[in-house]
Amino acid sequence: MKKIAFCFLLLFLTVSPVLAFIVGGSNFGSFIYPEHACGLKPILPSKPFAFSSQQEIDDYNNKIKVYNKAIKVYSKCINEYLDNANRDMQRIREKAKDAVDDMNRTY
Image 1 (cartoon, one colour):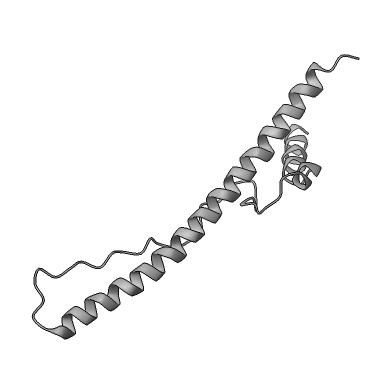
Image 2 (cartoon, rainbow, N blue to C red):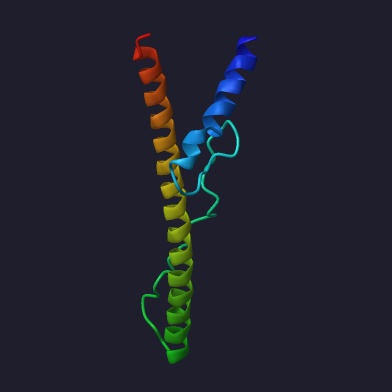
């Protein structure tokens, strides 16, 4: 019985009316907080010790351009994940505060 009550409490906390007060996305999808889904961080291409031709310079510059685009996408994804996580923490803080207020309420 306690497990069922605990599951309902968790469900209530994740889909409660508090969600209407905090605008924005969320990372909650289950009872386990998910890791980011941004993939692997792009790897900065290593610069050759010396360039022996213009083609090598152009190839390296193209690799850097690709890396710069990829790191921007990755960074945007991570920042969105962090924004969602911060909103999720705010929702949890508000629920905890509501519980304390309910406990302290005198009848």
